[in-house]
Amino acid sequence: MAKLTKTNVFKAYDSKPETPMDKTTRVVRKMVDEDAEKRQAKISRLRNDRLEKEANTPPETKTTVARKTRRS
Image (cartoon, rainbow, N blue to C red; front, side, top):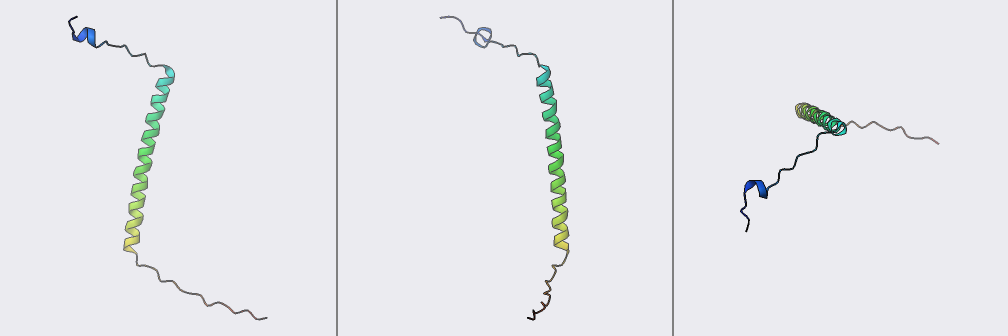
């Protein structure tokens, strides 16, 4: 039986060089992810502000408007 060593059991595969399309995809995905994080932070901030404002404001009482009756 052949002697097993690190060099003959696990072959190192060279990765393909990054193509221009791969580079563009990587950069665009990074930009989209950053925008999504900013958007989520803004949504959370606005939601918290709205909930805080609603908690601090007294509830409005509904007023009913007297309806006019129709005369035939």
